[in-house]
Image 1 (tube, helix red, strand yellow):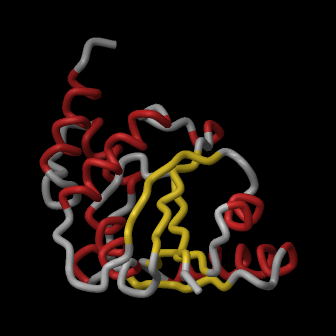
Image 2 (image 1 turned 90 degrees about the vertical axis):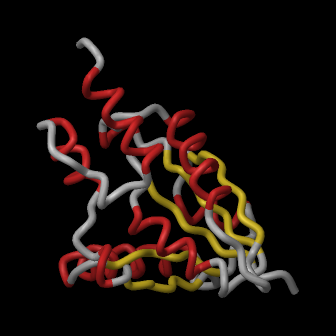
Length: 168
């Protein structure tokens, strides 16, 4: 039986922390689907299409190892558990940085299990060097002219600079 995992998120923008979770999650399944949420309620800096494109480029640049899952990136705009069921995921991967993440994620797991107790959630801790990275903070630093090059890849850094340096 093929094991399909889902790593959902807004990824606005994709950070080194996200890539670290992807790097490790793809060792645990045969196929990893990265679901880019169309969550307009969060007021994303980048459009869904831009975020999907950026994520596809970032995933393509990751080195591969024998046994790594195939990875596909696609947008989704439905309830997470409906999406997970539709793509036949057996597991949802979530990244954790701090205890505050766990409190929120614990509530989500409880709700998700009430909706479908067949799909497991696996938490992956970000590598220690990436634990402080949050997309929200990366955007704030970039917006105020700070250097985010230690939090994102060069292409994402360039996209942030272009977005914030563009005339408004």
